Image (cartoon, rainbow, N blue to C red; front, side, top):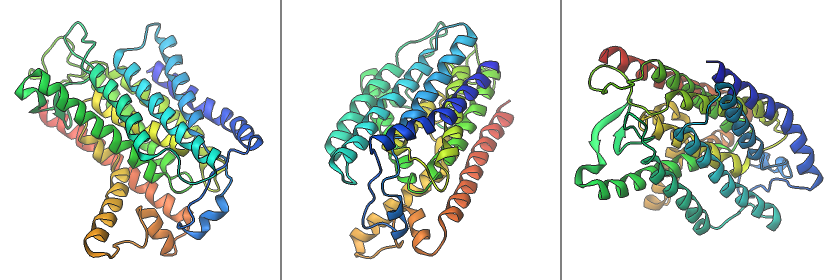
Length: 361
């Protein structure tokens, strides 16, 4: 537990202290946000606000994780290394996107083609390596079974290991891309994505701790209600480091935001969330824990799909939070109410997770 506390504390301290220093650097070099002209008029006042704050979140999370490893006195596990590498890799893609917007003075960054290629390369590498590094018990960071609260009977290797590996890579990349875009879409109001991420990763701290306490060890998961996860303690540490980093960053990102996380932070956080769901064997449960992100993506899908079919709109503007802005809600009201939804989703996910253990034990 000490390592988890250290990870969260270091992550919090680095963003709390480092973010204002990074803001000064960004202001000095005029690295500010460009705003869409077709968005809510109130957003035009945010033009020029420093962006790329995700850099601080990533650095803080990595330092928190490394500090916890030092406290434990051992090298980080394969699961933790893979998730943090995924987070950093997607953060680099996001950074290039943000920097392109600033350099070209426009609201569009990297082309969709290069973003997809970048995310694909990183996602494929993560997915392939997640099936490697089996420990003494034969457990790898990920498995080819689609997971909900633990691995389900749906095995992607049903048609053979080769085909199963390809299917798993496709499945993992779908999750990584979906969650990255979900956090990115949610990052439209001051503090919204940061606060929701804090709650979601906080929930995964508890999931990791519970899996650690009920770990199968040398046993088969069929013997008892134990969890057949390779590195549950390290998963909790990674989640704690990211949650701490989000908490410290939220101090500066809350309305009125002094800095935005940008695509740098949104892609990194979404990738880390997807990675944790994969290595903790809770891929479907993540939809509940990160329910706010799912709702916001769904609103965008509904808007686009309905418009293509009928040439009419369901919402005044998508994603969903912009609909409420145009309906007259204040930004603070929307953010706080959406935080409540995010908290309820995280609590519901934890309740389902615990309830299943009670039934299976």
